[in-house]
Image 1 (cartoon, rainbow, N blue to C red):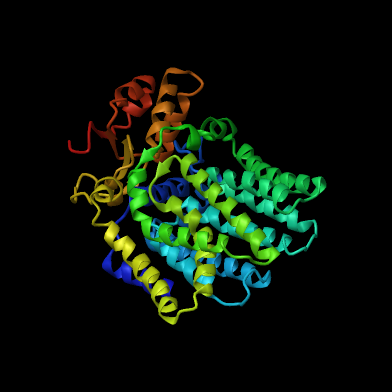
Image 2 (spheres, rainbow, N blue to C red):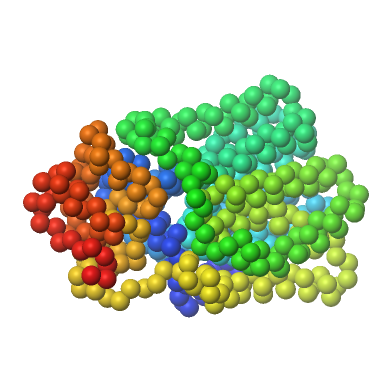
Amino acid sequence: MLLALIRVTYGIIGLPLSYPELKFLLLGQWLGEGMSMYTETFDYTAPLSAWTYQLLDLVFGRSRLAHWVISALLVFIQAAWFNRSLIKSKVFSESNYVPAFLYVIFSVAAFDFFALSPQLMSLTWVVISMDHFIRRMDNEVGDELFLFPGFYLGIASMFYFPAAAFFIIFLLAHIIITQAQLRRIFLFVFAYITSILAVLIFIYFFGSWAEFWAVYFTEISRAKVFYFTYLDLLIWAAVPTVFFLVALFTALGRREGSLHAKTQQFMLLVSVASGGVILMSGTLSGIEVIFFVPVFTFFISNYILKIRRRIWRWLVPNFLIIGAVLVPFLSLKYESIQKNLIVKTPEDNPNFSGKRTMIIGPPDPVYMQGSIAGPFIDAQISKRRLEGLDYYHQAPVFLKIFREAKPEIVVDEWNVMPKIEHRFPEIEEMKIKAVRTINN
């Protein structure tokens, strides 16, 4: 109810569009027109996320509301699943729904939590993997409890590449915490590789094999795109981080049961993986902190359940609720976010209204006045692919894109249209209206 209330309230107020959310919508629309990922799309988004955006566009069109509804559903599933794991494994001394409630609260505090991001989709599978691992610590030693986590983590990595950090941490946890047999560790690794290979087979089948490998490591090797700084992120997450540290040091000072202690060790390792995801990510937009939500939820739930004084049991949760609900609203007033993360709504321009537009440059909100008719989703990869105009075996893809996309207007931000028309006279004969910049 709280999740629905917060989302409906912000929906009525009108949460502005962010640049990552704009990219997700445009990517789905471009792929929804039948363009292939990686070959005819200049972007590095993981395949399962890209295909999800394509499916949503085919079903709902370029609908921001559809993304909001699906993302809310994923947050609810994650909260319910994580809470179920703690109850079923009896990690806490009493069964309750405090973890699920706090999970929703911390998810709301993550900026851009409305967006259906690859990070959010990936985390869903990480949480499901955690369920199997926690059950393993309760002396349930069926082989499937080693097989399924690896399989789910492979899926998570195919939604968001930096989530591979969780595979490394889960592997260490199997060795250090549960002291699993070598055969079962091999099962875990085998399942992880198998799920990734299944996705790669589809990519190979669709003929995007070479282009996929050309951008596979882009997420962790590219120059990070900072929508705001690490200091901004630290200030933004200061309140829940302080509560987390208090809860952590309080927990370390207590003597708990074996299962609780092992789960605590495991969640500390998960926090390391979450930090690794932020460092590996190709962007810093705020939604990356969503990977810390399970960790914060576990330790702060434990802290709240141990509070004895009635005033503090009332004050701490309500302080967290109010802070989390206000974070998205207060963040919009932050100058750095206003400048770098929020899309500036362009003035209505009849030249672009309802037109199929190709922008040879970074994605621009002017696309929202018409429809996207170009593959240039990520600026860095687009520049790299444009170098292919000088190579015989790479250049023909541009002619194919123009033939299939049929743009009515081209915005040439990088001044490469003359070279494209020189290479392919057929494009010049299309009589496409071209401008050098959007302002022109």
